[in-house]
Image (cartoon, rainbow, N blue to C red; front, side, top):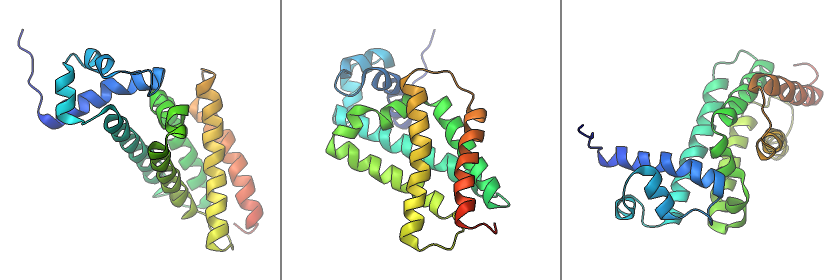
Length: 196
């Protein structure tokens, strides 16, 4: 049987795809490059052709996952007809992403990434990116700083609920969770601007 030869970008993505569940399960410090190489069916030197270090590989995963999450939410809300629909669609996209990317959520919001300065900086950028997307949807008579604060609170609501579900290995229906969380968020947003 002939094995398909991967292009460099395909091989790089294959390494990322194989590394994600290992990092998600074991964390950064308990994952070795040997573990990743074994999972990818390659040798360690092949990994180093694409990533200079384990940190670089982990950082690339954080960037990729963060971009995917932000894109999922912004695409889902882009054509919404009103604020309530935006809120519902945003939460639906977020919890669907979390359900489909549980290892990715663990990697992004688990302990190792939070405690490391470089990774924590990347995560702050991701949180800010999500909050900025949410802030642009808040149509209330508030100043930009308050709008940003409200957006961060909404993203914190989603992250906190996801953390509870993922850390406790709870099975969940992303639609049901999104419905509950969006109702809670929308009630708060309506209180800011009762005419919407």
